[in-house]
Length: 454
Ligand code: ADP
Image (tube, rainbow, N blue to C red; front, side):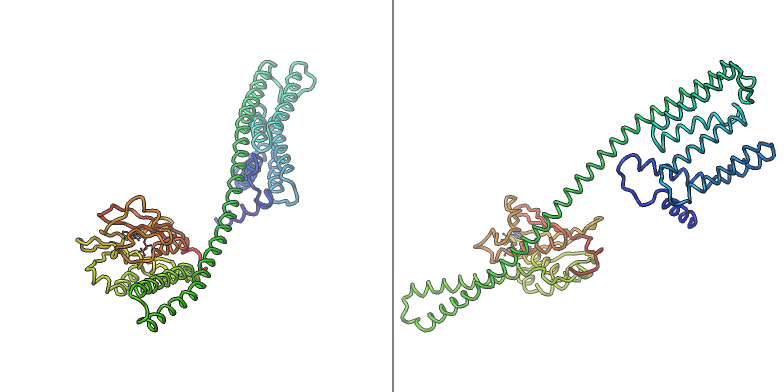
């Protein structure tokens, strides 16, 4: 097997040269020629050796010489390097042509000469072109016709045409030529169609490649814009914190120093300023956290089951207060960004507990499923649910549905979306109001293939 492989590679290098792209039919014609030589040379000892012995024993000296020459020419075609494939094909076809005529003269019509003469046109049509095959058919017709005339007019005494009647000869010849023309014509039609398909496929591939390149460009621009936006959010959040801190400080200073002098209504307004600025500080912190998300992320292999166990401890207070139960089983080990992944699960579990129905005990289920290219997880609850018209919007930044009833910043799910995206996945929700919600997200397995952390 090893030797066969080496033999094949060597022959391919000599005959085909550099790997050529599939441009048109000539690619397949060259391949066909390569395989013809590959197998003919490899198995030629099986035919040539018995041929040499048989022609020696039967005294056909020309056939003996022909067998040896054929073998040598095959070796030449397979291993001599600086020779164009078109010339190799010519030599091969000429060899077949000579074999056919030598066989015809030596073994007469009973031998395989006519069969060779027929096959040489077919092989030519397959590895070269229909045009060239027609030229060969023409040459064969002229030569066979001349031989026919010789039978009739007795110009020379030839053993091949001895004892042949002109009618039988022309009967055989016309059949051979007719069959050759029909087959070459059929091949030509099929090849033309094939050529058209190959060209169409090539054009399609070019279009797809161009589209892919455009898509890559757009992706790059989008990534840059996203990066800019992140940077912008980070700067805004960071810079706004400073004046906010002064506002908070002066509000408390005013309250502590001039409390007596400020009328009750004024104190109430100052209280509002203080709570609003506290809320604003919380929002700015969340925005900063959102902008920072994924920076310096590190890829590792971790157990999701262990992460959920840790989260049960981290959220024990919330779980206890709400008498919640978290069910999970058979969670896998995955490759991802552990810190971010934990935050993703934490947000989803905390939401599942937070948005509960008053009368129900909280039940949270976490499950996973594996496909060929990704992991799919779900976090399901039996809480208040989400109306279908809000199910897409809740993943956008600051989008909250129950502002007065439940506390929050509206950044939790936006964070989740960002985390899932850096894992090459998607996130979506399926929910029935007053029954519960199921959040699904996927994690790409491509992360397993790349070894470095980005
Ligand atoms: P926050 O929890 O801070 O309000 P999120 O981004 O985490 O912000 O969620 C956005 C909105 O989506 C929430 O205000 C809530 O209305 C809705 N939501 C999120 N998770 C659930 C859930 N498990 N059940 C019902 N509603 C939910």
